[in-house]
Length: 112
Length: 116
Image (cartoon, rainbow over all chains, first blue to last red; front, side, top):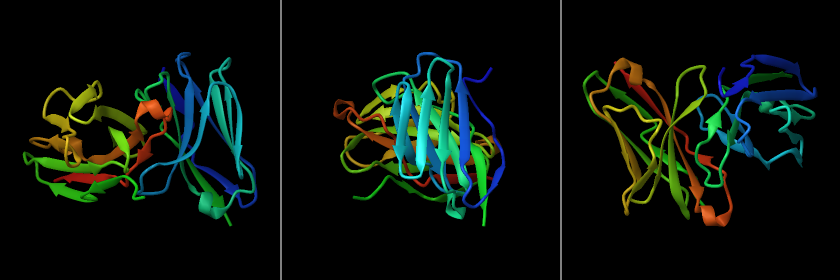
């Protein structure tokens, strides 16, 4: 079993739809959870950062962490064609910002 | 405030040559991480450095790969005697000093290495 699993997609949705992206993980020591957006042939860009369980909202984006289920989600409301990208989840167990483990990414296409 | 800078953006090497990839972290960041990304795969951690120190190189291949982050200048990822399997995108990320409480990593645009 991989340490972090993520459906690779591609996921295609119409403009304006609510998008749900998910990751599952096996290491219960993970405490810090991040979502990155990566456009084609570009570097990942940090979208959301959460610590432990709970929800965090930033504009159209909401991140949820359920540590009991080892499951994290990213919701995108009112999706736009500009949201078309690959979304990577990442997580780390420690306070030192190292030992990041990334999921393989989900490719999202938002169709106008 | 400039972001993480990497150069070159594209690098072509023949088998057996050396590849040198450079990374300048964001201003004020003292931690540098190198990752490799193969097509359709996630980012794989390679090495974590602070100035003049390698903190964690558990993701680095045992041979041909080395990394440094000198007191002055950029971090360098060096691949000796490249092989076709080294072809990938190599990303550098930086983060602030851990005392700041931030664990976020900020990525550069990557260097795409092609080995012919």
